[in-house]
Amino acid sequence: MSDKRGISGGINPTRRGVNLASAPRRTAFALFAVYLLSTAIGASAAGLRIVTSFYPIYLATLNVAGGIPGVEVVNLTKPLTGCLHDYQMTPDDLINLSKAGIFVVNGAGMESFLDKALQQVPGLKLIQASEGIPLLTTAGEANPHVWVSVSLHRQQVANIAASLERLDPDHAELYRQNAAAYLVKLDALRASMRAGLQNVRQREIITFHEAFPYFAREFGLTVAAVIEREPGAEPSARELAQTITLVKKIGVKAIFAEPQYSAKAADAIARETGATVYRLDPVVTGPMAADAYLAIMQANLQTLQQALGKQPSAAAAAASGE
Image (cartoon, rainbow, N blue to C red):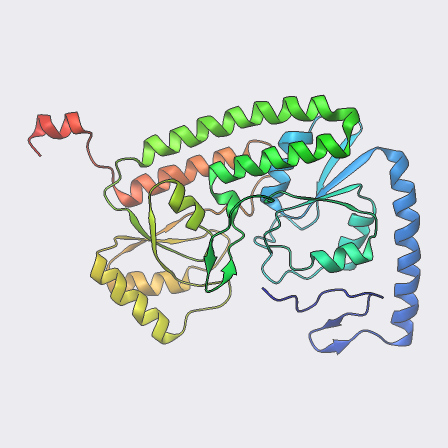
């Protein structure tokens, strides 16, 4: 994941090949740096502002810190941003961070802009939600999509809660109570999904990008192929042909696109193989509501049951003579 428009020390970015380091720009950014300092000083008197990097981390943090007097949770990126692959920070992002006391990120390499953000806003306290979680790798590159696994998202919530308790001890008991209540909900979700996916007929899936390996491992599925390694990196004709051959070989009947991205490549594979395209949501966009993760995952469960088919129970199979 590259950082193509990152903001480096002194705030002198290059955007789409246009150098913004002209004299008027330097003056503007110098004034902006003064603004960052002044707003950071002013923010400390207004309670604790927690900024999260993107949607799934916002949902996790909201369930730990939401509703606590004097604590505000806001998201850095816009609701439709999706995964932060190659995300490039804007001056508005820096203003947002300058008002924060704590920055909560996914970590695991998802936020490629992180080091430069910390350089621009010194003193910002950082929580990495994926700390301590063993990562899967593809071609030597760590996969950061840990939140798509309910169990690992649960661990992220616990990590966030423990870190907030340490960084903001005045509200430690409230963080513990909120986290405990949400973890109960995640445990119920995990049990529901395990039961719902236990008897599906097809266990090999074709997914849009590398968002679902942790999810698949947790629920006993196998990602047989990935259409795009990263969103926007459309497969070559050769890669498309290889995927079509694989789908025909293993008899996959369902291909999973994502609601945030174009299904063009998935549709092409479906036309050649007779498979059906479904939408599986990696929880990177959606309503900014505390229970949104739970609702999206329940919808994913229903989609998977429809797409993969459900085998009859052992009792039902015996009764029907199957």
